[in-house]
Image 1 (tube, each protein chain N blue to C red):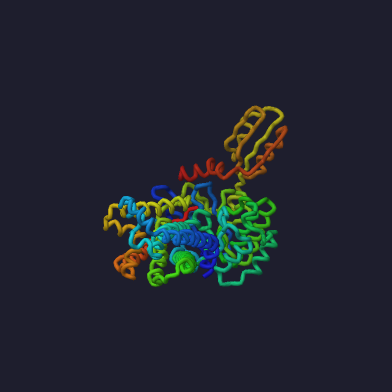
Image 2: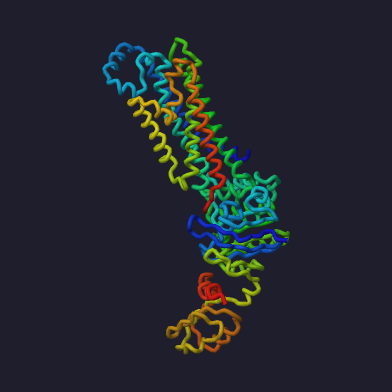
Length: 264
Length: 298
């Protein structure tokens, strides 16, 4: 438990700033919605002039775009992007920072097993991501309620919003795996930006090409807002895939971390 | 009873040599020296004992238990001080020490206070703002606060001024008096001679000698430099025990191994302008003595 508290404390500040940032992005984007819906017709006509490929790449679908949830799901792409960077950062650094800051000698010579260290640390990150999500969803909900008079489908809103957590968990597990495989990560942010934007660009291309198989490789696409709005649920195969990937990445990380040599 | 027993421990980093077939044991209540030049494999051995790294082959037992399998259990009774101490940013010394203490199911607060007083350390200061010497003190307290039965020190004296080093050695002797076993690694022979009863000497990853310190001190090694008033004949200093003799006019330099009195008498017969007698570095000793013994093998 002591490691868990220590890690929570260490994560506190950055959790706070990431959460604030996500909330601010949501508020800024969402506050544009009234202006958008006011000029709905004009905007519709303007957008119709755009090439289809670009519209697709933007994740837009004209019919749903002017509903609040439709607009929200468009904004949400960028929320998930930011959230993924946060999760990737945390995943990459939670174990590797002990090596980088050379505190591994301190922690690993304590009377505790390596898997216990890892469990405490990973739990702290998950707790931090949970907090981020709870605050994000709360503020997003309040913002939307203040902006629109018509009621929205809360169930769909929650399904979309909490997919942030699941995508974050996926990137977090990938980050942990990368951090135990790569011998020494000098700059966490370089790695996390490269990996997350790599997936994001792949996602954009995939939107244009429309190749279905590639979807399985892109965590952003596991929880498709359009599907959620149409079916009021997640896509089961992708939920199973997400759980499998998460469990696999974390388990492999445990094995590698347990066998790792810590050189000075 | 052996507190620590190392059996044929070998570690390769890929193809690079770490240590090869290292074996020795440390008895209960002993201060055991582990010396060798930099890069000889001291840290590799120690890190393997603490299961920070895993051996390629061989094994070690601590308190009679396998050091890898029962690692967590064994570490309850081990205090470790690395050569360089690094701690979490933004923590005060007292926070770090309390965090460290929280891993042992004992009340250590009294001991922390006591040790801080002996070492003259202000615990309320942030570790970030501390000098290297003060950080080291935090490390020392961190290694001793839980009353360990075995203290493992990896080149611990770097960064400590002579006075503090003396206090540190006194502290170690006091712990030893109370029954604590100490494994002390160093590349400075003089340090080990002061503190230890037995030593293992490691070079190029292999143990080349296990010796009683008494045997080592009997053969004191001194580097002697003399500036004579008048040029000296080379044959004058060619007595048993003099090695690596160079004479350049009035400047004489050599390493002496043996009874120091014999060479002092020789020096007394010379008109001396200046004289320096110092401990040779371990590298020098290795180069001129152990090389032959380990390499020649006769």
